[in-house]
Length: 108
Length: 123
Figure 1: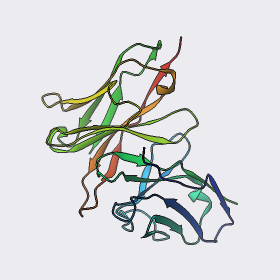
Figure 2: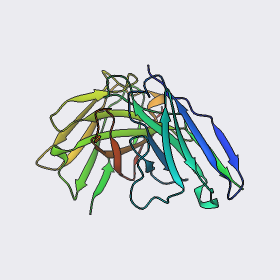
Figure 3: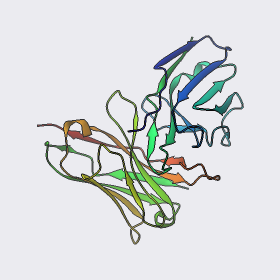
Figure 4: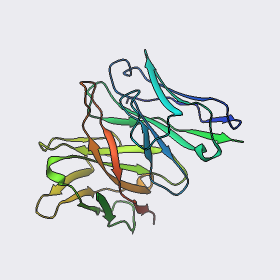
């Protein structure tokens, strides 16, 4: 079955740029979404359709996609950005969803 | 205000069945795409199933043939019927609304999530 691959963890200092990547063979033709999940909470979308930011999401969050990789960039990461981040997309059919394994971001 | 409230989670023995419900308010389930996502304890998110406005249904390989997604339009409620449950089905199950993509690249934005309901499969 189709898989999206993420690094399990990333650590940055406050104010640094965090780049979280997601790789998958279908990404050149499928939308990528990014979800932030803090402990004990439901996920929240921070980027949709590769590079669109929902209202209410800080401008420091941005997304990009190139070839088989999607990237979530947090420019000037804040302590409150510590969370698990999941990429989400679909297989080549466009109907079967798949999440990446998640990246635990530590900001300290 | 959009709200999704799941119920039906329980401790169930392997091989058993369970039906989860998701009562929606603030929007109409039948004209929206809906999805179930689960998260095993301490693990990542896993897409389980989706139902589109037209009634098409889709399932993850891990639950295909065992789980059935459905909706009751009169109750504005989404369901997940789970049969032949296994220990690895143990998870928090989230009901969510799936907003269709604005382009042709598929997928969809999960814009509203319920609080989740815990299913524990154990003897």
